[in-house]
Length: 92
Image 1 (cartoon, rainbow, N blue to C red):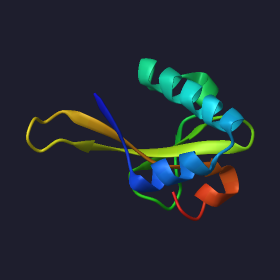
Image 2 (cartoon, helix red, strand yellow):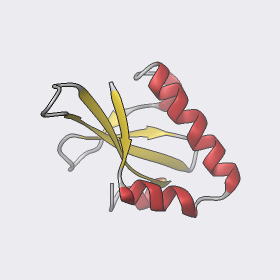
Image 3 (spheres, rainbow, N blue to C red):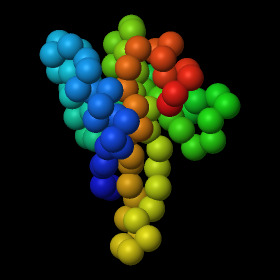
């Protein structure tokens, strides 16, 4: 599986504190090693087709979606956004 970030994710990640960035990085490594770790509490987002969210900690989440590379057929996991839980409810 390939992993990519969107410009929105990159911008939101850059705006996080260094401490939260490290937490997000650890969560992403855990996710890439096991796409369904219990600690990330992964679930589909209600009201948004094909978008999932994962827990970084009590306050922060990241969202992602799956797609296919048309040229190779490989599955792509695209990180869409990262931030406080309530913000992602409106802009996943």
